[in-house]
Length: 157
Image 1: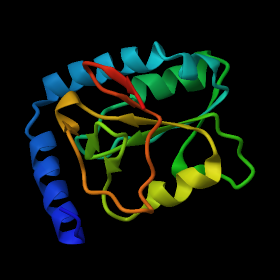
Image 2: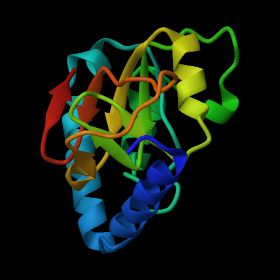
Image 3: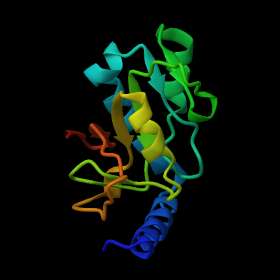
């Protein structure tokens, strides 16, 4: 599997599978992911964190984002409001699929693959455990995660 068509097929399957999780489970799994995320030394040491606003059936980091904004003394940034002079320590990156080498499959527009090399920060992929596969097709421009956090495990690469 190396073509864009193969990646698109994987995206379509992953989107359907993620949508099939009922809301109650998605809330529980998201809470477990937030707990795992908060346990990371990388998050505890970080001052400036890049996160995201949930779209559709993605992992919901609202609780995490609100904590960072309201009570941690840390700053949170979102991709749409990121300025060129921001010093980001950790970037939390959603994905449709992740593999055991640290590669992710996103929505297919290459946004994070272009953004992350400019930031020079720790990149943490976020997903539900069923979104992990053994190996994804990858290209030279695909950006590898430093860590992956799911509802069941934390994997450092």
